[in-house]
Every structure is written in structure tokens, then in C-alpha cells.
Image 1: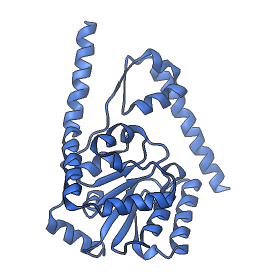
Image 2: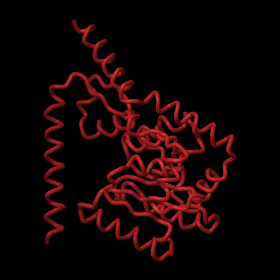
Image 3: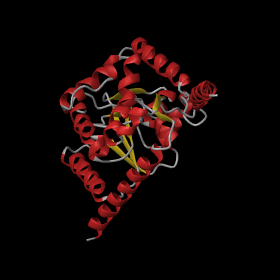
Image 4: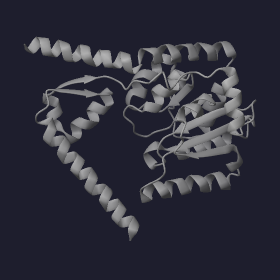
Length: 274
């Protein structure tokens, strides 16, 4: 069957990548990875990393592309995407697969709507390629139809202007079971979005510096719905404090700053070896 060969091809590609990684790691002096959690995961597959010089540097963000919207810009974009101006917008962007645990968000959103009507959810994603991804997307669609919430969810496949979708949103939710250094995290910060995420990868290391209330600690949809309602109901002063911290941190994580950190690390090691 076609699906079988697609899956088999995926496994072959993955095996090839692992072999190449093992080969090049034998000749590598310095390894740059985005988080301590990533290092711990990689060591299990590549024990040789223990003998290498490893530094943890998170992914950066292009602030020329991802930046806060003006009030006028947000109004124009909401009209363009057919979202009521008074409604808050929740956003998820990424792959639709088990690892990303988007079902938790969709189920929580359904429960959230029982307490507030002025909220929409945007799911933006890459076209599902593998059978498991197609199956997962179908399961999300079934949940939205059975819960009668499909009219409150905007599905955007392969968006041409992802930065615009960030600009019409208020809260980004990343309920991943496993992640390394998701670019959506830094992109959200640069757009002044409040970010809720599970404690994985760089999110685990950086998000508590902003506010511990933004960490998704439960896999229970009801608890996530309550957490979302709590964040949505924050007073303006408290919300603005979080957004101020978010934006301040994003300026530290620009690609120009990250590049400089990498350069300094390389320079210091080069000079010490000469």
C-alpha cells in the first residue's frame, strides 16, 4: 500500500540521518545545541557527545519579520481573516502529530467556549505528509465537529504570511510532549504574544523567567481550559507586565545577538587552542 511505502521511506531516511550524524560526530570538536534537555536526549543516541565540547545556545528570531502589530494593522488583519474584532485569538502553529499533542488544545478550547464566547482558535500547520500525520489531522477535525466548535476554529495550511497570523493572535499555545528549541517560541515573544507551553526543551529553561503561570503542567483538558481562562481574564496591568518581559527577552534572542554569542564561543576556543 502507498501509505506503507511512505512510512518505510521515512524510516530509511531517518536511519540514514542517524548514520551520518554518528560519522560526523567522530570528527567534531565543538557541538552547539539549543537546550540542556536536547543534550540529554542526544546523548542517549550518540554517547560520543559526552567526550565532546558542548555549548547550549537557543534559537534566535528575525525581528525584521516577527514584530508587534500596530492597532490598525491588527484590525485590518482580523477583518481579512474573518475574526470578530472583540474576540481574543488563540494560536497554534506547527506540525499536526501526536508529539505536538494538539488534541489537548482542541479539547481544552471546546471547554473554554462554555465559559467565554469571545475567543477564536487558529491552527496553522504544514500539509500532513505521512500517514500518521494525516490520521492525526482527521482526528482533530472529528473532535471539532463532534464538539460543534468548527465555526470557531480557523484552519490555515501552509500559510504564506505566518507573521501576519502571529499579529492577529493574543496567546500562543504549544502543548508538545517533546520539543527541542521551537522557533514558534521566539517568534511569539517577538510579536508580543503571551506564550503558554509545556516544560520541554528551551521552553522549560526560558519560560519560567517570564512567568511560572505560563507553563502547561497538566495533560488534562479541563485544567488547560481553566488556565487559558485565567490568562484571558488577567487585568491589563498584569498582562502588560508579562508582555513587557516577553518583548524584552525577545530582544536578547535576536539572530544578531545569537550569532554574536556563537562567534564569541568559537573565538575563545580557537584562541585557547592556538
